[in-house]
Length: 436
Image 1 (cartoon, rainbow, N blue to C red):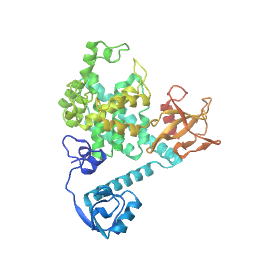
Image 2: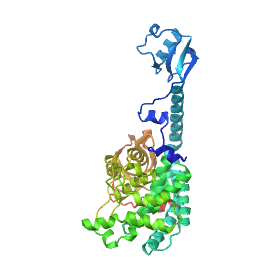
Image 3: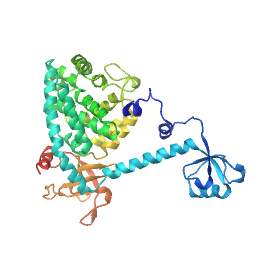
């Protein structure tokens, strides 16, 4: 069974005791009893029997999970040997290993600010090339869908593979590409951004490369049905009528039909196009399915699709801030979106996402280079302009989690800033970084 199925097919896959323990679910299983010397006891072990009556020891309960050195000393002083719950010991060791792996991953990802800056700029040309090729390809795909033509799925897979490769090398670089937005090319760019964000999210969830490829394809093709909707409705600047909104809803069905009839496309990709507007409680569209009928791919694409749509400018409204968009996702968790996945998505994006602009407490402006996994409010940033919004010739990178000082002042984020507040087009910044 694939990793994605093990992690998320909750209705079909029985949780392991460790998974249940992490989620606070009572674990009912046969206790495996093992005799050990009291000097072998360690914190985390659960003692369930002794070589003497429990009344000889100063414990209220006749089962103790050791959590302090003091408790260890009591058992060693009174007993020569004890009996432990070996199952709980295995769970404890599993948890220790999981925690250690997470710490190692965090340490690997949270290197010095200068290294982050160099690594990002080293990966940007590769990411930009993959982004440009994918954008051109998706534009062609959309044109073919519009005229019921043939789409080159094999080329789509090749480009998804390039995006996966870049994201596995440096997720921040490709994440930056999602900041490039052209309102006039919304549908094509939206599909590309959803594909990139989905792959980046899948990496955060530690999915396999095979699953990342499939997830990326789901994102890139999820909205092809929009090409079957009249532009007069898609690009209408005023509010849609009820009848017009019903027509827009048909894009999920039309996309599914096109992908199914095209042939050679994985069913997971087809159903992601069909189901990305469904809700966990059955009040979405087009079929009012509930959580039991939605795959984890459907649920991931639903979150990423909504996030990108909310944070993008449209002909009828300005995009909202990432903070507001993630707040809406969280509010709708367990109703429209899977709560576990929403929480993990917010962990990945952070309070200040990669590529977002911020203002520091010294008045200077900076751009976020990467998110610190264990310090979401203190990312790695690059100062780009002074308090008068004048661009700096020499751009300095700081890891704000390290309490770095600039001219004697500890740098902190004062506020987030819209992309239009200072004269900095992220696309121009990327072009400049690529040219260096």
